[in-house]
Amino acid sequence: MQIPGFVSLDSIEIPEGWQEDAETSTAIMLMKQFHPPEHPDVEIAFFKRRKPLPPDAMACLFRTLEQPPHLVEQGGAEIISLNDALGNVGNNQWSNRQSGLDAAGFRMLHAQSSDLNGKNVLIVSGAFIEPDTKKPVNEYCGLFVPVTVPQPFIEEIYLQVPSKYGYLYFEKYLKVFRQTINTIVWLTSFAP
Image 1 (cartoon, rainbow, N blue to C red):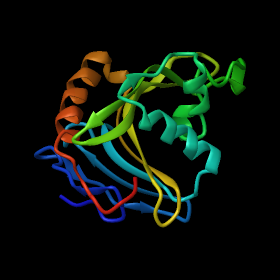
Image 2 (cartoon, rainbow, N blue to C red):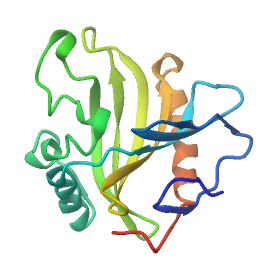
Image 3 (cartoon, rainbow, N blue to C red):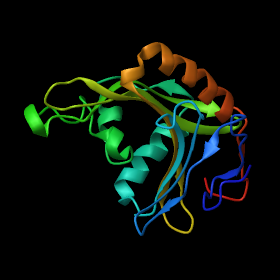
Image 4 (tube, rainbow, N blue to C red):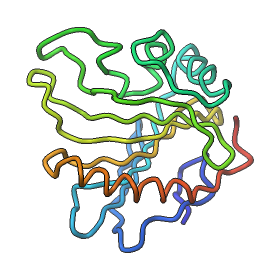
C-alpha cells in the first residue's frame, strides 16, 4: 500500500483486517492512522510534520543516522541533542528535568539507530505519561525518518497502545508493528 503524502515511503503492507481512519491534514501536520477492529484506540500511524525543523536539529539527527547502527546512550549528549527532532517524544526525562505539570510527558525506555530495509532510521520506545503522576497513558514505539526535499522535515511511523490494556497487549501489537515496518519499501529518489 502507498501512503499518499509520505515522501520516504514507496510502499508498506498494513496488517490484514486493520481499518483505515480518516486522514488528518493541517498546515503543520499530516497523519494517516490504521487500527485493529477490536481496538479502535490502538493505532499504527504515519505522521509527517510539515513545519521544517531548524537546521541544527536536522544536523543532530543526520549525525546519529550517519553513524553505524547503535544504541543511543540514555542521558548522554546524543539523546539530548535529538530533542527537537523527536517532537513530543523529545520531551522526555533526559531533556526535561522539571517536575510537576512542567515535567516530561514521555518516558523514554530505548533509542537506537537501526538499518531497516537498507535505510538507517531512529527507533524510539517508551510511554507517554501524565507529568504530575508519572502514570503511563500510551505505550509507544516509533521510527523517525529525516527528509530533506522539498524542505527538511521528519516523517514518523509509530505504534501507540493505551496503557490501560497492559503491557502484554502492547507486546502483542509491537510484534505486529515490527512485521509491518519490515515490509517497508523506501523510495530511492528521496534524500538522504
